[in-house]
Length: 438
Length: 74
Image 1 (tube, chains in turn red, blue):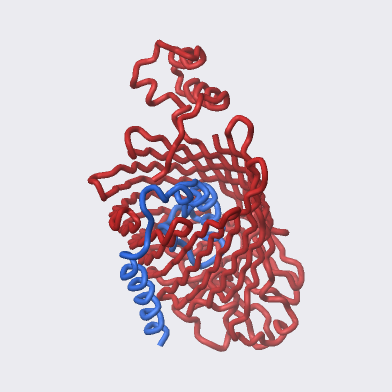
Image 2 (cartoon, chains in turn purple, red; image 1 turned 60 degrees about the vertical axis):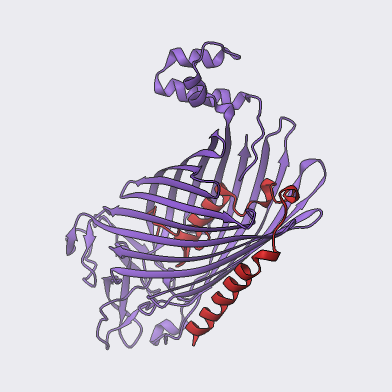
């Protein structure tokens, strides 16, 4: 339950409302919004258009990897209470990605040439470097809507929808969550369900797994122009208030992903006994993955600060296991300022079909991927958020973080020339974010 | 072996929290600190942005909320 204090209409909200109405082409209504306070609006108009009744959170995030991917993501989240504890939440996310991404090939002691995913051109990777495809580019628009309301004294139902569209990807989702409060609302048990249906229509079609990635201009073996996957998540949660200063949460989640789980842009190198690449084939992942996780979080309110600790253990039938520890410490300063240092540590084991490369002398396995993201890896994030309450009651915050990934060799012998090469290059990224709540 | 350990940990956590419920908690007038926005278990916008980064860069997702699909970034 959130207590929302009534606020006066803010100029930014009025401007946003005006912009929205202008976009909708409803000039007459737009006019009435500018004439505040207006007596012309019907109650229905007031409800829908009165942005001052919305609690809005906006954020822009900049993500930048050294020599690889850059992303900008903008979010606006609006929450509105319609009647006692009846909430509508709407969220719009727009992001854009550019840069270079590892294509799965192994580094070599010579210059390598690769075909671009479209099949229409090629690029070269210098000696000893991790091959990166620099045509990685996408823009995504995502819409989320969520309605939450009590359905009895102790039960709250929340249901929502999700739509996300990229140039080559469409994701549609629904979710529902039922929460039951008991023990004087000190304990909440919940069960949630979500279903996603995703359609992938990649540039250059869906390649046939384990077939050769052909030279530019030569047609690849393809399974068609698009493929789909579905994701079912079930989540059981328990939230417990410990005392006036402390709250804890435990979750168990079960997730089944079914369908096309390959990355159509990634391949695996086949090397000879000297470690030199002889072939480069499309990766092949199983068409099903079952994941489970347990998650525990606790927050404690000290006199002048709040500590937030969480832990997640995840395991799946691809034999990936991961541990995540996350900690935030929000320290209240004078005049509504706060600083919140953040540290996160993550470690995962490799999936049982991860191979940094294949040896020519062995048979090609049915399932293989050289995607480092399903290999053994440690990562850490360190950073801080600084926030302040402005004189008009709005909130402004800045967040700066450093994210470091250390992919690891989980026991693969680096044959021949590979012995002298860096096959598990670390990845470093900076994240900068601005939040504005009004 | 890991499975057994996991089950024991899960069971202990659940029993500890459910069994202890009777003695845990606060009266309605003691919710001043817990009602603060800064004591909410999740910050909607920040969590979504973080989830998107880690979903794209690591093999795990969800746990705190739905892991879901949602983008072609993994």
